[in-house]
Image (cartoon, rainbow, N blue to C red; front, side, top):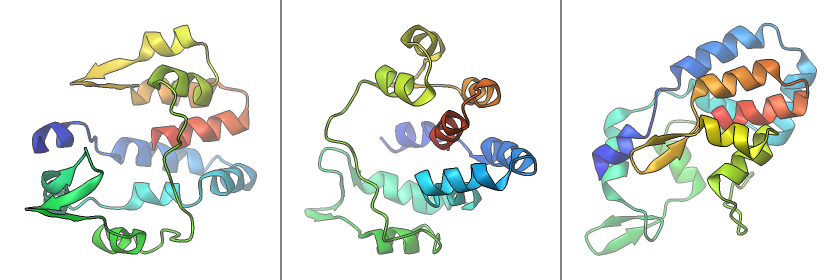
Length: 160
């Protein structure tokens, strides 16, 4: 299970490098729009992942109950504990990120976020193991080509 989970995670260096190149050309209005909509999500690109910690977290994660299981003990860390474990003190702990109750299919979510047709999204979805994903190149091309600034910000947040 651990290796399956780790295989799904890709290094965010490519997105970080691309973002920094784009940042020099972006105006403050776009940065403010991103921050208003997504808070400090962009900060996640600068966090260096501790591979050993990540492996330990993946090993004890119980996806059925969305908690960590150690023997017969289930634990759910608080947001503050996660920020300490992951060494990201600048995360805004007063902002709560939660999963929506009305869950759309993966394709419909991408269609809504990217603002393209379902056929466009379906043509670009790739399968990685048991999961579906959309390649960074497709997202980057969409950010560069889409005329709507809000959609550009949404697609960039999705790529993070």
